[in-house]
Length: 153
Image (cartoon, rainbow, N blue to C red; front, side, top):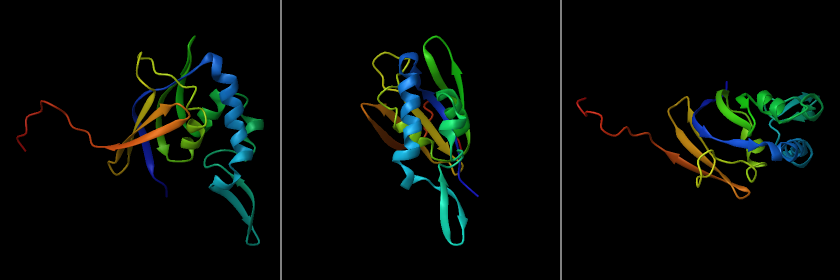
C-alpha cells in the first residue's frame, strides 16, 4: 500500500555553502524526531527499533552527505557549482517533508525574488505547492487550470 506522489515542478536548491549544515540537521532528525518515525520493527508487542519511512535506522552512518540522504529519500537530484538541486520524485510518500523542512531556511530559488518551492501531485489527482524559507514551509492546496484551451467537451 501507500500513496504515490511526484514532483510536477520545483525550484529548490541547497547552496554549496549550506550543504554541511543541511547534512548535520538532517542527521540530527534521527535523534530529535524519534517520536515522528513511522517505520519500525515489532518484537513481542514492542517496537524496539524505529526509523523514518524509506530510510535506514542508522542513515547518519550509511549516508555520508546531503546527496546520499536525498537519494535514499527517493529524490532525483543534480549537483553543480551552485549546490544541489531537486529534480524529481516519483514514489510512495515517505517522510521527506521532515527532511526538507529542517533545512528550509537554507534553500534558494534560481529566480531572483521568489521563494523556493515544490509542486506535488498525488495518485488521486490532488495537487499542492510547498513554499520554503524563513524556517517554515507553507503548503497551498490547488487545482491545475490551463488557460486558453477550447472548452468544447
